[in-house]
Length: 546
Ligand code: AMP
Image (tube, rainbow, N blue to C red):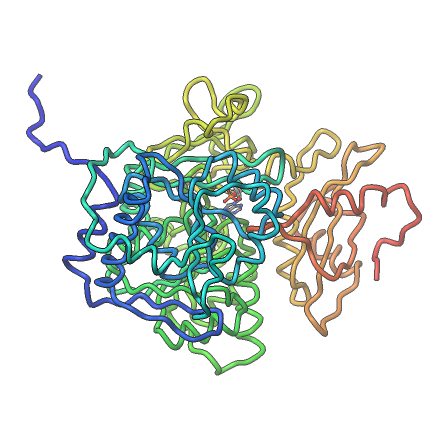
């Protein structure tokens, strides 16, 4: 057996920082501030400041593996934390500002965060939980330009950065050292922490930029709408820095008009976010035609299923939609729905069917679906739990020994997603296992019903949940939000479903609601809907509620 003659070279994020400094110094990073003005600087300044942050953290006594929390919107200072903290051997821990304060405190305590970097506009949020979460030092980013109130012991982030001036000395980092961490959104049970290594984030970036994934290059202008506290904004800040793309961050302004204005003003070519964001964008484009030109804009969508109808609406406006699947535990990219060359000449309807699926696994991610009796066939019909493994898939949770049931004995991560995989290898997520509707011994996919309902021109959003049923154990109930000014009857919607699905799939109860409650990361909060409508089957409630 001969030995390889290749060098051993550590895969670390500091390489991205050095590369950006060397090759991309004049490329811009643009951030929208709370007052809607644009903050802009170049990679040269960004790298200098990220290294200064690393130096300042070293002076502050940060030890390898220490956690530094962030509570920030998407902008330049958050990007500095993305690189500055790991460059010093620290672990950047993004806190989700949309969670209830008690939960943020629980997560910060569980992770043992030492320091916190926070936007000045988010200080009122910190006040609601700081008694329960002890940070040694709090650095406040003065986004508004107002003086930072230091009376409560907070420090100005800019002063802290200055303290690191000239003091950054590269530390030796191994590729398997931790770089960042994130907690699952915790719709069930306690939130669970996932710790990403440098190696995982580097490999994830390399695959994410592939043409068959997010298709990111140096020539792109990238605007991640997905929050930087949601699985590292899907890894885009790392990947975009690796290739030296122009980066555009929307700050706290996530309404459709603000985003569309920003895309136009900065020439954004790639953007990424959850379906709710794109639904809003589709509506804005239709309501105000000829206001924005989105021709060629590539939109990555994930976090929840993208309804085919919304995808078609956006593509009819010139956007190119890429549907991808992932989780906090998968860094997150697991699969992407690009159309394989061997399928490119199929009918438009077939192509859309594949585009609306969650796609095929990206390189280095292995997938399988399992049922109680073993591995399920890839026939596009048989549902099973999706299991994955790969170099950026969590093999354990942070400090949570009783979470071992999420991992199989033969080394796969159990996603909790129920899926089919077709003969071409395309995964289709049918449900979270807890959301699947088990009716008379058969499984009904709530996602399939939702997508069909959202295909109706009057429907803005629809969520389908299981409600208890004395005869069938569970039956589906559809909660539907109509578009402003639009109308549709229960009978009309039921008829559409009858056209697409077997009779027993069609919900007896279709109710009209003002809005679908959503989680902090934009997913339907189905538990709340189940609770609200659980007794509807046995009550005299009319099928359609006003
Ligand atoms: P999170 O860890 O908060 O990113 O949530 C991960 C979960 O979001 C997955 O387990 C899926 O249930 C869901 N999810 C993510 N991407 C998609 C997608 N493209 N289609 C359907 N569900 C998705």
